[in-house]
Amino acid sequence: MSRILLATLSLIGLLSAAPALADNYPSKPVRVIVPSSAGGIIDVLARAILQKVSESTGQQFVVDNRPGAAGIIGSEAAMRAAPDGYTLLVVATAHAINAGLYPKLPYDTVRDFTPITMVARLPLYLVVHPSLGVNNVRELIAMAKAKPGQIFFASAGNGQGSHLAGEMFKSLAGINLGHVPYKGAGPALADVVAGQVPMLFNDPISAMPHIKSGKLKLLAVGTPKRSAAVPDTPTMIEAGVPGFDAYAWLVFPAPAGLSKDIATKLHAEITKAMNAPDVYERFFSPRGGLEVMGYGPDESAAFIKSEITKWTKVIKDSGAKPDQ
Image (cartoon, rainbow, N blue to C red; front, top):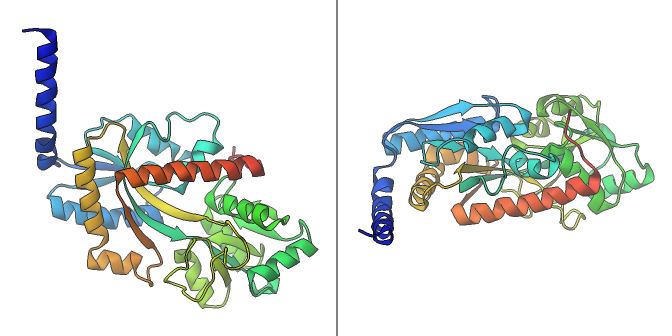
């Protein structure tokens, strides 16, 4: 039998087997690497979704927390796994930011992963301490222009999303703000609540209790559209900062080479889990504050590429460097 005929028969066999593999998937537990510590919003949301996927498929989807290096350690571990659907990854905004922030990564953010679904978008809230004495973004911009370099914003650290959102704000509004980086979102928020630093961009889940208590004042949301959780709050664009587009997000990728059939099946299972009544109420209702997305593999891949382009420009323009 000729080599060409053998190769043809092998290809036919692989193509015919692909749907069968997807039909039988998963046939054993699936490891899901979360490149952050347990208890954070990424970890909590991922676990809630994966619990539903486990119930639906009859196989355990086991979270493996691999924190460190802004998600790089966990992402590298996932990249090196077999692309058989039994190792998945959960990534957030840092996954795209890192592509422009670090000169050398142990993987290619686009080439080495197969996105499965973009789960959620999480608005960044621009909050200020009441003592700053501003009621809206235009007043904040006017104050910053009158006092260049004298108003400071806090962030979770150099190169973090909250830092780059502030840099985007500075650039688009034409203002000069000082930056105070912290080692994590918790300490940054705590100091803004205490009035040590007057402003920051923060996730709504941790900021909302302080907004409701009056300890923080919400000026705007960073998403292009208003948030259902705070429908009376303008977007940054509406508030006078054209082009502002900064928010957190959550995507499930797998190592590059995952079959399209398995990716499609996982997308369907994860989307179903997101829309389970208890998960939806907890995270995606107005009370939860997250915006459900449910992008498929192709749309998720295009989205990540667009985020890399956006954040790489902010990093280049601002000169942002990662914490050493």
